[in-house]
Amino acid sequence: MPYASSADLPENLQRILPAHAQDIYREAFNHAFEAHRGDPRQEEAAHRIAWAAVKRSYVKTDAGWEKR
Image: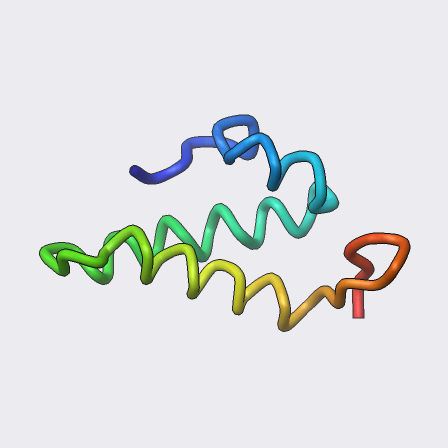
């Protein structure tokens, strides 16, 4: 289920990630979702890939997610 906008992301992601990180997550998820079409674990793989993309640009601190 690709996300058309950041407003379509799960509520917890909207709450914890900064806007730019949400964009990274959404774009990576949508790309990975399409790339893994036909895989029974398509959505799971897309979520893992999207988190990896966020973690390349952001780091989680006690204050929340901050740009590297």
